[in-house]
Amino acid sequence: MRPRTSGAALIALTLLLTSGTAAYAAPGHPTDGPSRAAERLARQTLPADDGWAAEGPGTTGGAAAGPDQVHLVRSRADLVRALGGDNATNRTNATPKVIVVDGVVDGFEADDGSLRSCADLADPEYSLPAYLAAYDPAVWGMVPPTGALEAARVRSVANQTKQTQINVGPNTTIVGLRGATLTGLTLMLDGASNSIVRNLTFDDARDCFPAWSPTDGATGNWNSQYDQVSVRRSEHVWVDHNTFTDGDNPDSGQPVHFGRPYQVHDGSLDITHTASLVTASYNRFVGRDKLMLIGSSNTVGPDVGRLKVTVHHNLFDRVLQRLPRVRFGQVDVYNNWYRLAGDGFEYAVGVGVQSAAYVENNYFTLGVGIASGDLLYDWGGTAVTTRGNWVRADGALPRPVDLVAAYNATHDPDLAADAGWTPTLRAQPASPAPLVPLVVGGLAGAGRLPL
Image (cartoon, rainbow, N blue to C red; front, top):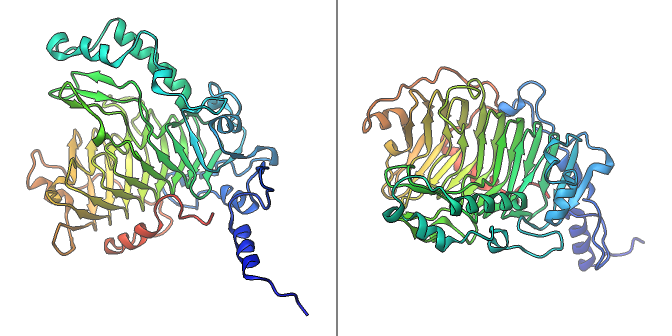
């Protein structure tokens, strides 16, 4: 007769089989590698035809990693070691590697486990009160800061970059277990072709030393340096099922200096400096200002013919701008859900210099004060293709919308309605826009993969 299994034993067995950590760990003795289930998921490659990152050989990340290159990390020091051992040179480490993140990894963590503060990273000659006193426009004027205090700020930025910018090399997969969070850091994929980033929450990549830029806009702006994920000079990158947030440190809570918000955050996922062949899918962007900048400069040059990006099945939730902002690239934006609030919203898709965005079957939920004509913004572009998009304005029924016509009705000069190309790299045909909230609401973001 088969022995009966107790309810408690069944629960324990279920937790064991579904856990993302190793099969067994005695109390006080952490495991040294991920479970087989976690490793199998971490070795997954981008599906065929799934956006621009699937072009040619596709994107495989660290799928070819040997057993000695499969890592479970729980700290900044662990992450740096898994990426090659030296943060300054890890960007050139092309060895295939699989990295599974367990718990919270803090970019401000020192090697001894203590947390460093902004004060710890500041140059001895820098202080914010002194900086504000020296470069107050009423005293300094509306010209860029120069001199000893600005030089001290730049040295402070260099200190922070060494600490919080984590450099990733080619042929790398980084996947989070349930609840895995990268906080206070920038994941820098500079020259990191064939890389995959999945199932992670990116939280509060704050800049301790924002720069005052008096010539940015009519009244100047504070600008921060650090994105949450930055893709530069890389091809074949897949960023999937992540959540991007400022956590409990939103820009809306920052002080005002020189009449402008003291902004300590930059982009969520910026794709710049000749990067190309990127797919961003099933991510959730929550409560942030600047999200996705594609192309960093209006200068005609190396970016021409690059910056080919697919943005599909993402949730843009109460966010303000760059959803995305596009320069030069052929960018396919389809089946995304834009859940937009009125307070501070600027625009959704930015049509920049020589851009060719194809915006199809997206669903826009509009808060009070947002009109269909506000969803595009002309940053020096001339044309954008928009097809099959729907809007649901505050208090109104959902309806189809011609985004270009809505924009042209209230703005000059007009945008043309044909960006000159049609996407072919899609794993499945675009779903009708009214279905998008059902799919994206349930599937986008970290914690939705079977880990």
